[in-house]
Length: 143
Image (cartoon, rainbow, N blue to C red; front, side, top):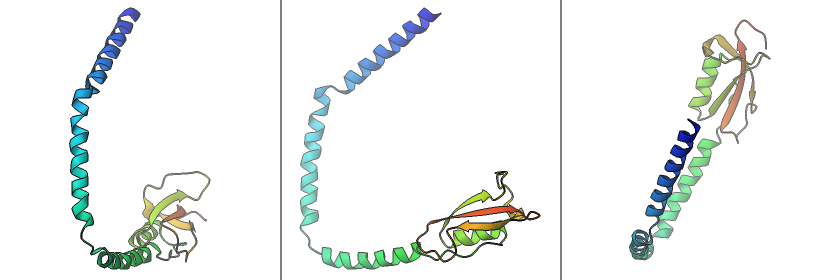
């Protein structure tokens, strides 16, 4: 049976090598790049000719100023809140949320409405965060 497996592996290798060589034939690859290269400079030239770029740049700068304002939302204080409510609040402000068990048991938080937040990272008021980690325990446990 080992001989059959080896023979099969050799045959598969030979077929793959033949397919790879056929795909790399010089006849099929030369014309395509020449046509593509000719088309691209022709398309680029008309796009470069109009000069309303300064007008387009001004609104783009205004949009850029608005985007950081959304990203720099202040991290709210969620410590002591119900885990599900804290998670909803953070997501509504645009933050991605990591949730962790604050106990040493390392449990998965499945029914997050039965948990409370003990700590968070980063601290409330941070403005440079996109992701907030909340560390919680079950409602009947202490932090």
